[in-house]
Amino acid sequence: MTVIKPRVSLIGARETPIRPLSSERVWARQYRTRLLVTDTAIILASTIGAIFVRFGFDQATPQVAGFPADYLTLSLLISAAWLFTLSAYRTRDPRVVGVGVQEYKRVVSATALTFGLLAIAFLVGKVEIARGYFVLALPVGMVAVLFSRWLWRQWLIHQRAFDHYLSRALVVGTHREVDYIVRQIQQASGAAYNIVGVSLDTGKRKGPKKQAALERKITSSSREVPVVSDLDGVASAAARLGADTVIVAGRALGGGDYVRQLSWKLEGTATNLVLASPLTDVAGPRIRFRPVEGLPLIQVDIPQFEGGKHILKRAFDFVASGVALVLLAPLFAIIALLIKLDDGGPVFFSQERVGRNGETFRMYKFRSMVVDAEARLASLEQQSEGNGVLFKMKNDPRVTRLGGVLRKFSLDELPQIANIFLGDMSVVGPRPPLPREVRGYENHVRRRLFIKPGLTGMWQVNGRSDLSWEESVRLDLYYVENWSLLGDLMIIWRTIRVLTHPVGAY
Image: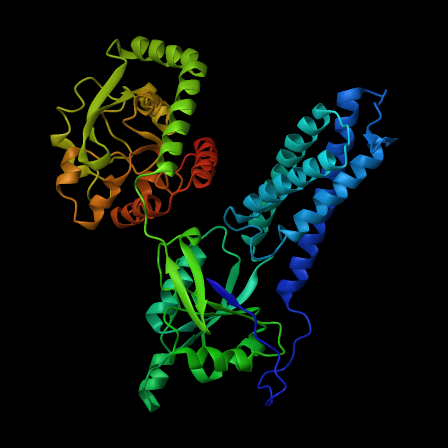
């Protein structure tokens, strides 16, 4: 979404009353203060603590241009520079806190820049400082700041579940566009908006037809959102409802003139104007703005399925799976022994799956069903509780006692780490499909095969078997076209959380 701050104009009268401070600005200021206090405490602790870890209480004295300097003073200067860079990178901006990974990326970038510039400054100034001090202060401080930001984010998300720390939003557009935006925002756990009303574009309707259009209801899974005005009454409705944000959904209604006039009507208020991009399922990093003489062009980067980024992904998969195979070897042995003791059958179950570019491979799992499970599948097809394409049963009679436990915590999928090491799969990717599923794919669904399937993915952290087929496809296609290594790390982290609170695992 693109945020437009209305400009202050001296021409014409305002149509809406001025609200001196919006509810968003109040909670954002309070939240920023908390982050600042936490960041300051952590940075001081990491820089000063590094002195005593490195030197104990017998501190060495660095030399600055031939003159002695105290490490404590130097730590305070480094802390001040670090805090300044965090502020300069807008790491506490309300538009990034609690939403996506931008907050974390800004913290990492600000920290790296701080220590990079300081290293250059110390080199130029001939500051003889212990390397161990830097090696301790930088990673410890950065990890601690990131962890504190994560803790604050969990607190913020919890508060938002009770409609606290949210921006009051008014959505503007046609019924279809408004309905889509409302549902997407209310389904997103990290969304920062509380939709307090919608303003509908009634087109050329007049009289009873226009009134009937305004009386149509906007409903979602959680609640009903009232229709508060037509397009002409957006500014006054925003003031009446105390909206912090007006979201214009879909296409620019009535062309650019409507958006411009609406921004004029919101001048002098504390209300933000947001344009919801019609580019559905396109991640932010792929969108670039290229203004040309007042023409706001939007460039969308085309997905790339080869090149350095994919080489880096393979390197990460190889190293991560290799380390995991070594560390998890004792767990593999325990699970294998338990399966043997349970019914005496084979430990592993292998199945043909379709990988990248339609190539097939054998995928391995710990056996969680009876030995003749495949032969008994046909008799259970009519009882499937899956999404119409995949066969799933919450109480599948073929699952063994031990298998139920393994499936609940996804332990049966651990042997797929070997598939990752061999290059058939990736740590993160679309769900590995069966050949019979692929034969029934529509053309656009085949895009799931453009990258390697994953041990985990968007489907794993968003409901698994509880997802509909359409939603599963949408999530996989979104990942295929928008994946990043940082995004993969976030999905891995979310997977660990899901495994402790399994949803849709059966």
